Length: 510
Image (cartoon, rainbow, N blue to C red; front, side, top):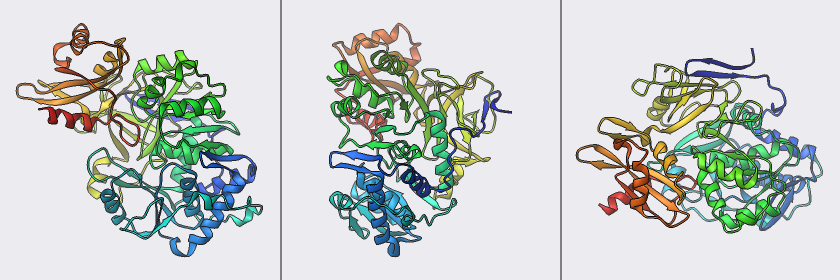
């Protein structure tokens, strides 16, 4: 049987592996297949220049040969900004027989030192020295000092499907991030499911925004572009005007925009109103639930839908909106192939709930993690009964569409009632003057907690007027106790609104 199997709030997507399956058994061999297929094709472009697949292969081969004796069978930490250096360093580590650990270079040095301490580090590849581990500085000029690789057989992949192809790090904005190792087989399965959702063609030009160390940026910048020998255009930094220019002038066909805050920032650019994107055809979204207002405004301006999906470092993607199997704005789409999604009760996490009821989302599939390295306590919390417990709250409808209501930890408990911030945020974004919204909890002597709304504005209004607007729609216990106008929302390195920073600012004001 193919298609969705649905029982209560449990769905499994059963589909034949046609058109989106990848023959390569490892990530390194997937790159080699892309190089073999199109050595002259553009691989990446940045402000420092551009590399064809042949030129990139030469740089990867040279670096791999240089690293092999030191890193084979050991961990190589990549602490680099999005850049050609990062791409070359990642694939060279694989071809050298090393295990890449992807560490966000925006972390403070003290955090980086702690993350490195938890790894069997052979070497750090970075754009700066790190005293806590031996470091090799990556030099972009050196990467381009190679003639295109002519001998494809020179690139020998030493890895196996069960070998670790990436150590990623998962964690919110508090606490030391947890190590999540993913095998080649798991990442190939991830690539396949991404391509099932966002069907790509040969010669696509990708514009990723999220850090390559983040699961979304990793898929949009490193792995999925190579499936059909596509190219990656790498912004020097995220700035809305820069992104608009690249979308308009670089032939971009796939915009890896990520969370709604990124799309909102791009639409707020002064250049956006008059820009055209003649080649753009796929606009994936993920990382946080998308307000309906963002969907409406983007499609009205560009004529293109945002194909929202859902995933996390532990398993991605989980679900995607697709033209072939249905699009429902505001939802995270339907389960990707061979993946089961269930909605279970918040108290025990064992009982599958009836259709339409709100509960915790748990999932399983061939691309899920096997655990957090060296952290059995967190592994036991996240992995139970063969499922990843996501910590997200949502519902499944009768057609199999998943809607994410909130993070479990973001639920606000007001006088015994559960208040979901997203419901209030969606309402706030329907106000004509509000361009962004984030609702967090503040402790309250009588109610336990109360919601407080932070908003950014696109036109003049007052906090009192916004409160009155909410009062006309929301029941009393959901009404924000306060509306606070901010010039811009703070963002995490992954481009999500930084709820913790807003929450901490309430303590500062108290």
